Image 1 (cartoon, rainbow, N blue to C red):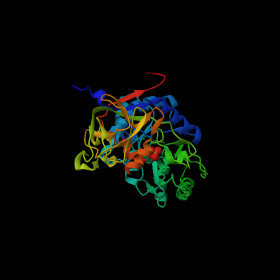
Image 2: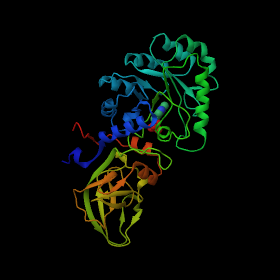
Image 3: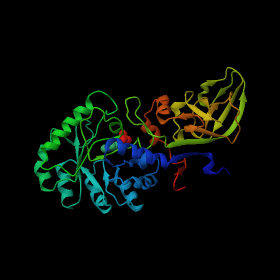
Image 4: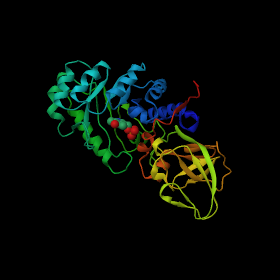
Length: 362
Ligand SMILES: *Cc1c(COP(=O)(O)O)cnc(C)c1O
């Protein structure tokens, strides 16, 4: 029987994760509130949060009560902010797990204030997803004065672009801060793209909320800092065959050999998160060399054209990350597949076991 550990897996470099966190902290001059929602973008929230403790973050950010509860059960004692608005029926569970909600409507604020527990005021400055509109914060003035929030924050919608929107959102946020009864202890706004390009920003915040940068996704040419790769996806070669001109590969026969062609089958497919959109256009690395995906990616297996590569059953292929001198970044693979790097990363499925590397502890 084939072991689950040898078929295909994700390697996570916790040392690189820490370097990326230290880079954001140094560049922003702020303590961190690492965003570990969605199981730390698929890397494993508990392992990631425990590793990041070394950087003395102010707290952690999650999207759901269950995600916060998981961190508490793992012994994380720092503040944990839940950023997706809570429904009233979630309040008790949030309180039991000692989570800090992001609140923005009068009814929720009133209920939570009775507990005399910290909360953060979510202010919308243009994203129009969650948070009280910057135009309407003044309506909450008396309520906020009665039991002020520990923190106040907003969220940028296009910080990776030079389109002036960040400046506009910062100005709206600054106006809200000026109008609050008192300035809360914690003021925060920066996600990864904003933390990667501070140039042009006049604002200083108490904490930064990086997510994807920590996990190795950078923001290209305009960025002032770049992350180390953290995530590597590998799969074993489980079949190698030679096909004749005119033969086809995989469902739909979208790959047709023009000459004698060697095809390697990798034990990974779209049910692992290797996107079907990479059919016939994705690149994989085998023995440190690039090979093109041949035919449609299937649920459990992906074929590659290895005509130019001495390749054998049992070889380890790299679908994301480094092999020798070649590197497949999350950004480049996502761009090839026409998906966002966030989607590619969070789409890596639990069928791929996670293997953690840390220079100092393993
Ligand atoms: C997800 C999220 C972040 C982190 O975003 P990245 O682009 O991954 O850095 C920060 N703040 C809020 C409110 C979020 O929802």
